Amino acid sequence: MQADFWHEMWESGVVGFHQKEINRFLRDFWPKLGLRGDEQVLVPLCGKTLDMLWIRDLGHDVIGVELSQKALDEFLQENNLAARPVPHDCFCGYELEQMTLLCGDFFSLTAEDCKAVGAVYDRAAIVALPPQMRLEYAQHLQRILPKGVPFLMVVMEYDQSSMAGPPFSVSEQEVRQLFGGFSSIEVVDQEVFERKGNRVVEKVLILRL
Ligand SMILES: C[S@@+](CC[C@H](N)C(=O)[O-])C[C@H]1O[C@@H](n2cnc3c(N)ncnc32)[C@H](O)[C@@H]1O
Image 1 (cartoon, protein in one colour):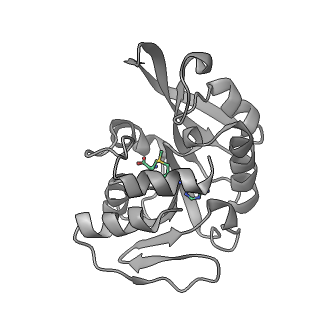
Image 2 (cartoon, rainbow, N blue to C red):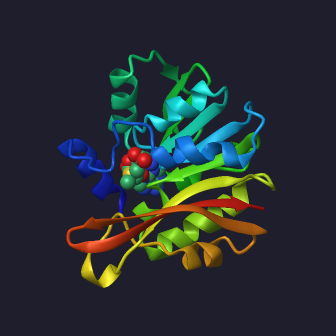
């Protein structure tokens, strides 16, 4: 999707993907990553997700990357968080206790920005992107992340011909193709639900290099 699509969505105030509760899959399966607890966690395409606060409360530093300034402003305001502007060449955004919120294009993120990242949380990020951008997203992540970084990723599979994205249908098989360099990709849970009369399978994956 082009940037305008997302900016218009945030301007409209209709952000159906935003969850008012911590994501269940995050709560249930984050421990499976086997982290120490002090790693820096990258949350690409973060929106204003409360999941960042949950991850931070575990002791992690969080880096969220989001196109929309409005999303980040709402995140701070709705959670009564004070922040200062982030000093960065390519992004605007905010710095606060144990959290950096970078406002700009995820594809401008560099290996230098990610040198301390120790885990990635992708919920509603890869599925927000159309096919060609998903390829670029996967390639970019694999280029900029330190080796060995585990991911918790939530994707959904449905008949794309019967419903348009976003969220797009991203199969487990596609993830295996896109992240082929990873030594293991494990499905740890799945849930089936209906959306606009279509069967949707949401899958929780753990990727390890
Ligand atoms: C479907 S939302 C998911 C947000 C969040 N992950 C959540 O679970 O609520 C996708 C978000 O990605 C942002 N986004 C889309 N393209 C982006 C890009 N190239 N760089 C940074 N953020 C982007 C959008 O503004 C939107 O907030």
